[in-house]
Image (cartoon, rainbow, N blue to C red; front, top):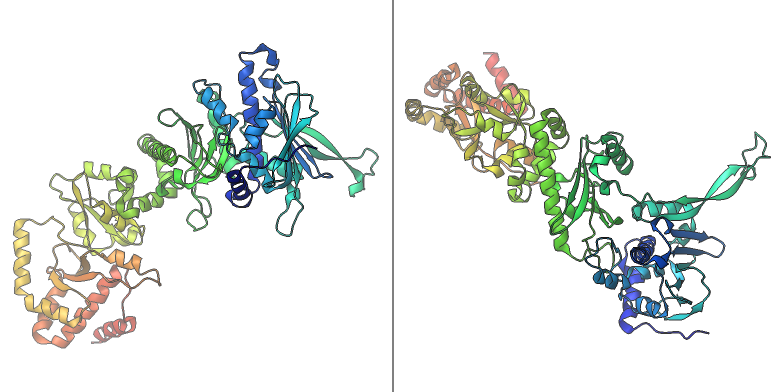
Length: 634
C-alpha cells in the first residue's frame, strides 16, 4: 500500500479555504479541470511542432467527459503531455505550484503557446464536489504511469498504475447528495453539456462525451407512449464550438453571422442596432465583440438589471457579467471581451491585475463612444432610433457622479428643438446660433406641446431664437452640470435675464419697476412668502403673467425632486413676473389705487394661474375656483 504523504501546512490551509469559501459556484470545477486538460494538450501540441516522435496532429487531440451514475464517478480525461511521478508530486502535492505557469514562462516568446491555467490552484476546486480525487497520468516519453489519490486535507498518495496511453485522467468520486446540495447533477449528461457550453465553449480542442439519448423501440405499439416503449442509447457528441466568432477574421463574417450570434447568446428576438468587432493590440491585447440592442431589455430601467460584459481568458469564461468593463452610461451594451493577458489568482472569478482590466475598460469606453459618433454622423435615422431607446441613460451618465463624465458624452446628446421640433445635437444648435445670441436657451416641461405654450417661450420664438425643449426629468440637471457648451452658457427661459433686450428696453423696464415699486411690494406681501419678489417682466409678449425662479433650484427641478414622497420637500425661489403691456397690468394699477383687498385677490389668482401654466400644483384649488367664480359673478 502506498505511503500517505501530507500536504504542507500552508497548502492544507489553502485547500481547506478552497473547498469551503473561495469559489462562489461549485460548478466552476468543471471549467478548471477542462482548462487544465486544454493546457496539457497545448504542451504536447507545441512539442509536436518540432518533435516528429509525438506522432499526432492537432485533429487527434481531445478532452473527454465520462459520467458513471452507478459508481458516482465523473472522469475528465485528455491525451495531452501527461505527468510523471515527480511532476505529480510537484504540481499536485504542493498547492499553487503550477507547471503551466513555468511552461508559459519558458516559452513566453512563442505565439503558439496559449496556456490558460497559471497558478496551479483550479485543480483543487474538484474537492468542492468530490470526496475522493484520483489522477492517473502517463507522461509523453515515459514507460510508466502513476496515480495520485487524495480525499482532501488528510494527504495524498502516489503509486504506479496501469495506463497504456499518454495523457491524464481525473476521476472524481462525487459526494453524496444532501438536503441543500445536489452533487448528482454533475453526472447528468445534459447538465454537463450545459456547463461546457457556458464555461468552456471556446476551448480550442474538442470536448467530447457520450450523451444519453432516447428512441422508440421498433416493436413498440403505435399507441404505446409509456417509458417502456423507448430505449436509451448513447451518442458521442462534441460539446464545444471551439472557434469563437470574435476570433475569426471579420472579412469571413456576414451581418447575419453577428445578428444570429447576438440573438442566440443574449436571447433577443430582434437584431442588434449595431455590432462592434475589434481586435486591440497594445499594453493589453484583447478581442471584443459588442452589441448595441435595438431596444432596451424589459428590465433595463429596473433595479434587477445587471450591466456588464462577459469576460473570457483565452476562450474560457471568467465571469458572465463583468460590470467594471462598462461605465453606467453605456450599461445597455452587451457583448464580451477575451484576453489572454488577464491573469487570474486563486479563482478565475477574482482578477489579479486590476490595472489591466481598467485599461481594457477605458479602451472599450472609447470604442463605444467613437462608434456612436460615427452612427450619429453617418446614419442619423439609426442614431435617433438608438437615442429613443437609450438616450436617457446617456443623460444620466452626464449628470451622475457630479458631472465627472459629462465631457465624455456631451457630444452624443440630443434634444428636441423649437426649430421644426426635430432632435438636434448641441453642436448643431451652437453652429446656427444668431450672431448676437448670448445663451443656449432651453425650456423644461412634461411634453413639447406644454413647453411651447409657456409664456416665456413666446417672445424668444417670435424673435427667431431657437429653444431646446427638455422633456425628461433628468434634462435640466444635465444642463446645470454642463453649464456651457463651446463657451456658450445654458440659460433657462424661466430664469434670469435672457439677454435679448436692448439698452433702451432695459432702461424702460427699470423705469417701470421704479414707478410701480409700491404695487410690486404689495403683491409680494399679499402672497405671504410664496414668492421672493414680484417684478416687471422683460420676457412676456401676449401673456399677462409668468413664474420664473432664481437660485440653484429651478421650477422644473422642484417638480422632479418632489415626485419622490420620501424626499424632503424642496422649494424653488419663485418670482412673479407681470407683463406691463397687457390689459391686466392696467387693471392691477387701478385696483392698487382704489381697492387694495380686491387687488390682493387678483394677485393670488394671477399667482395660481402662473403655477398652473407651469404644470405645477396649487395649494388651494377650491379657494382658487371660488375667487374666479366671485369675479365672474360681478
